[in-house]
Length: 290
Image 1 (tube, rainbow, N blue to C red):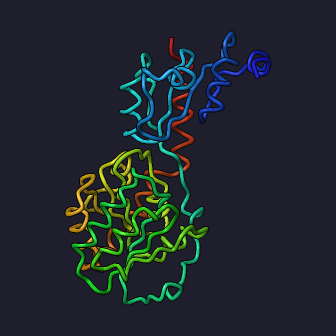
Image 2 (image 1 turned 180 degrees about the vertical axis):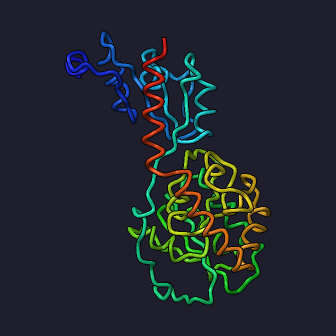
Image 3 (image 1 turned 30 degrees about the vertical axis):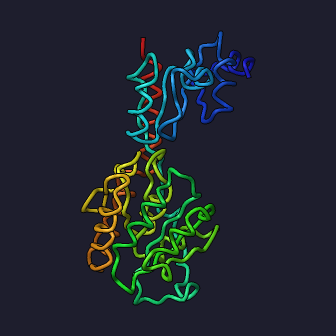
């Protein structure tokens, strides 16, 4: 790799993960190639952690591209230099990538008369599932059903059983057709309490014209305009979560309006063309920096 960088006349080398970044950091020593890294999540980067100096805190790193402003702000707290070269460039998307047929509601014993919300997650404590289950204690509409998609919900089984709407909470396990389920749902829920960069589940929902209720954690508020494309509620606040959910459950028109606006926002602000443009601009600026 060092031989390639030195003899290939490369201006930029770009590392995306904890394996490629250390390799590029050491391979680029003695070459003109400037090292840029990618950061996709908040938390986990600390000055007192020796391993951080193999990745984003390595002295060869001259720029860090972050997936969201939340990640950018977090990284800037920990880097020693080039703070102005820690920037946000949103991942680009095209609506066509996500256009899939809707999963049939009948698969879950549901009809068009039901209001369906989806929460898709590989569950760990940071996902805030307990907050969501607590919020269901404040939902009174008998036509509302909640689909929990993914693995790791077992620690929450007792909480689910204690919910007043336990019979309307469906644990459907790991699925390969999450975008199709998102397209079928009336809205999706992201109750995370920490550790989010720019959640893919929100993006999948937006692309399929499905509005969201999310928390203030990480980059979620950058995807959802509160009261316009969905609702953003304080992290860990089950009552606020329930209030936002009830506003959608009891207002089909609002669901439709928010869903249209969410899809338009993704196409307008998170498209692939803009991502390419911003990468080129950043690389050129970095190369022109004295």
